[in-house]
Image (cartoon, rainbow, N blue to C red):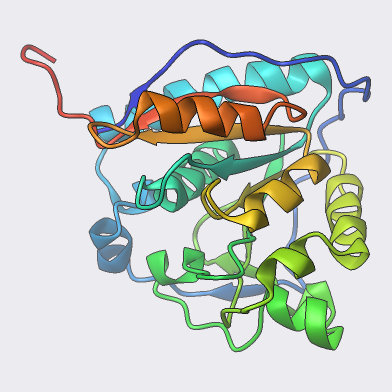
Length: 252
């Protein structure tokens, strides 16, 4: 189960706090059936029974919401200092937990253009995704997916992997998209699942978001990796850290 580190650091941004909007009606966005067993197998909280695993994300959600609302932020990235830290699962589960709060909707963007994998956790096989918007001008409205039965939650999948991912993430077109996603719906929180920070992708994209959340892997993320990651994010406010894959302590 995940354990949550508590030192949160954020710097003022100056944006006004968004007001809640009416519940979203999925008239254009595709709603797609998802298999609960697939969710369970990929450790997605929508397929889990209530317990410490689900509760950990609710605690994290509460802390994240407090910071977002304090600073008027609504877009952040989830990344990690090293590969295989479980950041994608953390991004998915935090997004789902945020969507349980009735005051906003949540858009989860698979911005890992090298190895997009958000859709696999839901058992989805999208024909098109973010890559098709960036390369072929496919409208965003055609790409969004709502896993049926999960309210206030939409995915922008990544579809096919791209070799020139860092250049695309740093492109003016991507910057315009982030700005559009942040401002189209005032009650929306946008979560970007990024590659780990040893890639140029995450470094190129980080300045576009309000803040970042770091996922650390218990027993594998080293102090030097964490220090290096914080250096890479020195111009991006840090929401905090999540310690992933931690063994439960006795009596917990």
